[in-house]
Length: 197
Image 1 (spheres, rainbow, N blue to C red):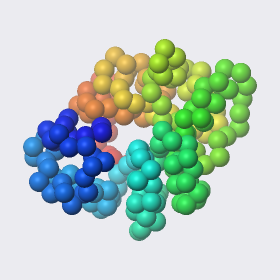
Image 2 (cartoon, one colour; image 1 turned 45 degrees about the vertical axis):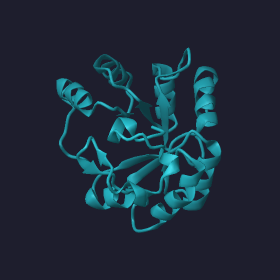
Image 3 (spheres, rainbow, N blue to C red; image 1 turned 180 degrees about the vertical axis):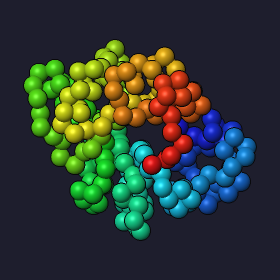
């Protein structure tokens, strides 16, 4: 989201406000917007996926990841190869990161043509189901990603039937706006666990 309309009912662009100016903002009118540090300290046993969406977030994210022992609990992705590269360079090989856009295109193409051995610095392919008319997430790509040690996380999936199809393909994670739908799908499949680890 570029603004706080959907989550907080506020017509405020996120890029136009400092965190200190959000003290009265409430998610769904109930909860304050937490900082990354608050999320990581409140739930010390969960893993967090972070999408670095703007150039302005790179340095603060690097600082947050270098503070304490949180690097092993996060996976960083970005639609910018440059931002992702800067974070990988600063944090080093301990960082779990997703493929950048160029790497996703390469994985998609090479999964059809030949086997590649790895993508330096990446641990996951976090991809949409489709990019325009092209289906990115298919059995061939998932199998190839697994062969070279990559997890496959698909976003943003809100439909139960699509969730079932993706689990059938063998994806490792589904990002959704409808958590209850995903939970129901996993319960139906006898794959739900209350253990966040």
